[in-house]
Image 1: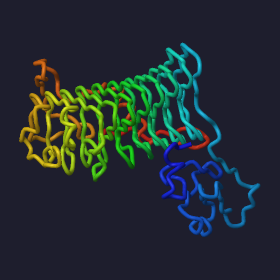
Image 2: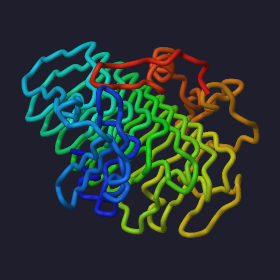
Image 3: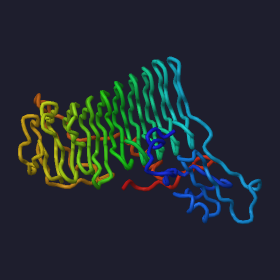
Image 4: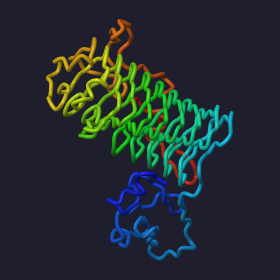
Length: 372
């Protein structure tokens, strides 16, 4: 049920990082080919082409002597108004974790955790209106959240961590979404943010960290993405520059840096749909505007107001914090803090779930360590 992966014909195997096949309670080897499976006793190979799952019996053990377990349960789907779901964990689901469909209003998920599911952690459909508070999506085989149609969702103090296919948080169609005080980190292999179609995404006081390399931090299509007092770090570039892009991008009072090839790519014609103000930039090669790479500190255009470059280093948790708070004016002359300041509850959930393990028996937590 991984939306994109089930149509991803480049790979004829299940995702290696998703441990969903178990023998006698222990995760079994997930092979990448039939040949590998044939010579690996106790292993699985899933072929999408053949629509079959193959299992190599351990030597000398008949099938009836083993407990073989695969994902079978599904998570929550809310279809009615004014529903509150709290303090649940959904693991090893063949689909998503915590969803809404149809046109329910007033849905609240609080303290809900999705781990190692085969679909998304969270997903809203139809014209549902949903609030997620203090929720976590870890190692799901799709986005941490993927919202579609005309849905409207708000994510407050949520963590999207180590999800292993699609964008970490994804918006599609004509949906609209707000992310407040959220942490988005270490999701792969694509961008951390997908703004598809004409959807709208607003990030307020969020820390969003890429995986370095060449992958951009976000994909912007024809809708809008807005950031206020966010920290945006460690990607090939901030945004994927598409020639036919008609989206709008607004970033205020945010800390942006450690992008590889350039801080940002603004194709010709997009300058009128970009508004930057009161930001702090660092550790990058400048802007690329209409194909021209500008040096750090060189004015990229009228769309950037009261921003400046910073020559210091970051420190603290995930090396995402300024040594000292910085305040700057935006285009309206308003003074605000630059960058995100996440609540301690978010960092505690990050530490709690970053190395969590699951099995058919439940959830196992490793001893908590200092953030790094």
